[in-house]
Image (cartoon, rainbow, N blue to C red; front, side, top):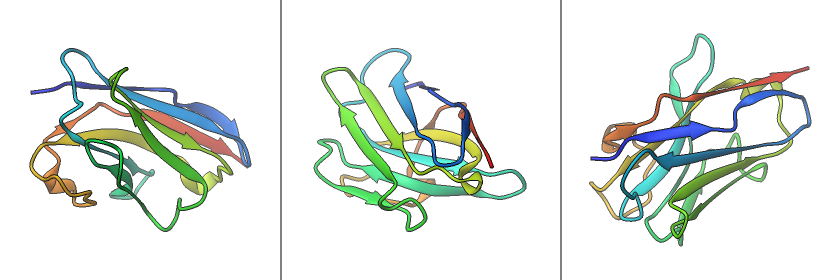
Length: 125
């Protein structure tokens, strides 16, 4: 079992950048596939980006492709989401998730067993 802690959220102006981080509160998640999801106000939680254990394979939602970059540093046991070109539409609580249920990169929320409590990103216009 792994507990995830997100950080890096905050208030940023449209067009700005933020870097989110996710790390286990104890142990390691180097053997887990990892992902970011987000929940915007009044909407359901949605997929943002995911990667495999090695970080070799990544997948992005169409809405963030080209603006967000997902990468992991297994030596530091940290997952990052570098976000640029932010728009008010990116305002959401961002959640880190982990799974060992598959070795393939996946967008399916139900595959992920472990979730952080989220970090709020607010983009002002």
